[in-house]
Image (tube, rainbow, N blue to C red; front, side, top):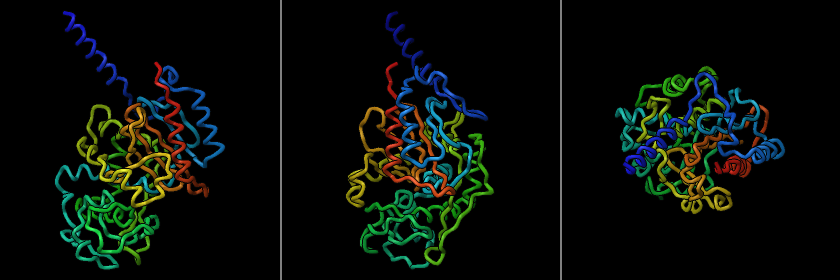
Length: 354
């Protein structure tokens, strides 16, 4: 009888934990008991002072257990999210990998891929999965700035899959291949796979657009504009492994595949030495940055990061999503160091003593 009683308590404890996850409907709810739920108000006030005094962030939210515990600035405005677009594309891939329209093992040669600068034979052996992991070994510039070309190797010197370097050529081609193999427009898929089922409040397909210098590469960048509070819905979806309320929106296995370490922090530092000075140890998955540490609160964390100060960061161990944006229209920008400090200060605001 005692054994059954203990088992029942364990079951009830699990049920309560599962039920504690909330999802917004048409609007986000605020956690009125955020202090009882582990958030220290003095630390949140310190975070806000840092945002105001030391950053140029224009919208900021912390979501815990599906409710707002901290909010700053304009979270409704749609603005440019820079490289966070890549992480969103990675999410969209899952449906079409599962249904067989996209074969991650297909090579560039299989797909008849060429560019303004012709590809070398070894470069044509790069696979779709290498593009998603930024490991194609194709050292060409993308149609838009942002590639870390100063760390490129000599063309043809690296076997595809063997070397990581952040490269917009890979990411932009991944967008082209997505549309080629699915016969779907990326922005239509954002709307159908994410905006509608997640009940995004501010999504506007009409303002999304692709562009780039096609004299450099014929594959344009698929730029995106989101509000902070809609980015938070994407973060909450990722926190729950692709599930929204009682519906599996994105295949859970695909979420796991995106968040595997295809590149460790050690390799990032080896290939791009400036990473050794970062206050966060990062690796790389399929177009998501992965936190490579064993801290009790940040273990297993992952981020979509964009230039000027854009972030969707998920902390599974504390059931938390941190999102912020910096509106480029105002000429505002944040360094990577400020971005990482904002994330660290957010996590430090959670003191699980309840």
